[in-house]
Image (cartoon, rainbow, N blue to C red; front, side, top):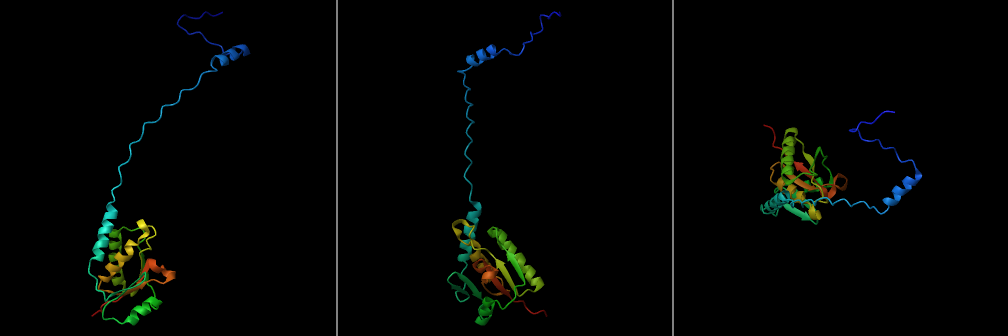
Length: 192
């Protein structure tokens, strides 16, 4: 038989005796696990700064306070209409009835006020280059806006009235977006 060195630990044999296992289970019967300590509380995040909302509200105030000519802007309930002064009302009527074919569309869904202004200006430059006469600008109905207020609807109308190539605009037909879009009639000076 081999002798064990004093610095070697003694090997323990697994408990195989049923009486020893029973004795162990009785000895630890009252033992309960300690509850884990709760995790440290997370600090509350700082409240968000409503910078974009503030910019949007300022833009609305700017658009509403611009002093639009009452003869040029017509409102019929929720409908937003515009006809440049000196033009025939028949032009607006034909635009509303869909007599002009829409040549291109601009969708401003999800844009901030500044993004929408930039997109619209770029779109009108492209319209000038392509000499489109009727386009559709989709501004949305405001269903995703706070308070479900269509911020871009008023702003887009105000921006369009400031462009000299915009002759008229009217709410789009239901199949084109209804109150969430505008049909825009454009006019270009003749090439000399």
